[in-house]
Length: 373
Image (cartoon, rainbow, N blue to C red; front, side, top):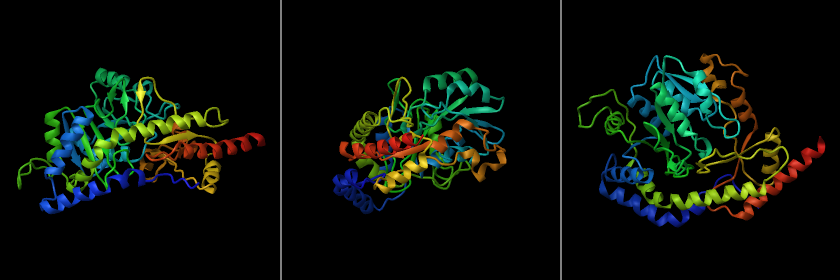
């Protein structure tokens, strides 16, 4: 049985006619930038997330960057970021001229550990930027309490966690602002790059609307040093078709994760995803950890099973961040997670039989490895 790491088929095939009709509708309007589709999607996505405002932008990185710019974060400021995350989280901080200050994660959940924030705090700290990595919600109540105590902004990176909750509240609705991505493989994916910022702050939303559009809300009048980062009308139309299905797709993801937990229980040498108390993940990824990651990945590939590594090199060891002088060993938890993580296939349309097949190969490999010890 060939099992790809990801497949769009089960999601896209039933929606094909509706998506093509939505694209044709945009084509026929002759209005292709910041039109009715974007406005409607922003309203619908705000309602889904339980927030006052959504501002559609070009992609997830620009969503993070503009969220920070909208809060006037810049040179001389520090932003507390997870040490293990996709590099876009750090790049957004760098793009506004601020300094990313890494905070090590909770080893069990791979998410930023609120207990470690205080040690990273300085007089220049302005923002805490938690990432709901792999769709696992961060411990937001502790993060908000810390931020409130020290007068800090909270900007969520919700790119992998659309529809996840913590303490019954949707991620993406806790912070002063939240950035998300609609990259095609996200839980809510467009057909290309797209992103958005959510917030309950009307003044911030207006500033973000200016920043995404050359610093302007009135043609040829520019109040801010802005960007060109506008959610495309075509992508907004696609997202509007998909959004009503997101809850059902999340239910499938949760069932698949539950099957993985059952079929992979007690596999020697394999650590399964841990969920923080009060969290309901969106299961963007199902990530296991093993010291034999590379060998296991090769065994699964030989069996026709696709996997990926999210992420093999932590940001502080990337050449782009050599200037921070954080050598190997500086952030040992992030480095350990990067060396041992493996993402197994999980996508709407997968079956229990597919999960069982993946688990059989993993169990067989683990038994062989255990027998060699």
